Amino acid sequence: EVSLLDTVALLRTAIIRGDDESGRALLDAGPEGVDLLRDLLKGELRLDLPAGRDRALIDHVTAVSCALAARYPEKYAAVFADVSWMKHSEVLDGLGYTQRPEAVPVLITALSSQLPGVTRLSAAISLRYFRDDAAIRALTDALNDPDQLVRYHAQESLAALGVSPSA
Image 1 (cartoon, rainbow, N blue to C red):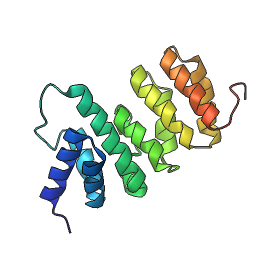
Image 2: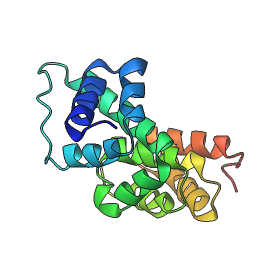
Image 3: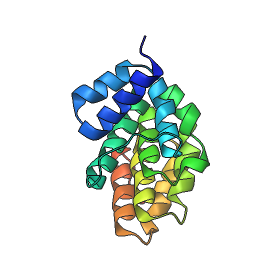
Image 4: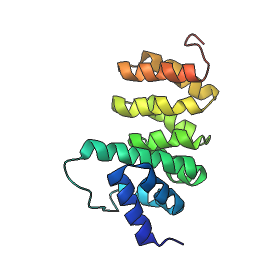
């Protein structure tokens, strides 16, 4: 069994390195990684991450989020399938990987919100994992989003679902 302190260290390493090996080590430590990600995003966990690598670290947090969601979908959805998390694009990305029905309302709410375009496009991307009438309606509505990237990803998600934009 891996201790909580060891799991924190594994999370830190996975975020810093962003490689498959460190990601697998975190996933193998168990579903507690989901709770630690929550604590990190809430600002309740400090990892002393290196400065000057902000873009890479953001990408690595997103990769960790998606990996945890894919490995532990029930736990991830139980923690993050709530509209209070919809401002976090890395969480919206992860919710898609859960493929859990409770993720759909959060993703639809985020997609139709006034949140920044990068957040809305994360919701549009994640909705491609849900063949759900409400998700398809939300993606179809997003074809009129003011942000071109949101429109693009809504169209791509509809295509991934095999839905014609005119549907």
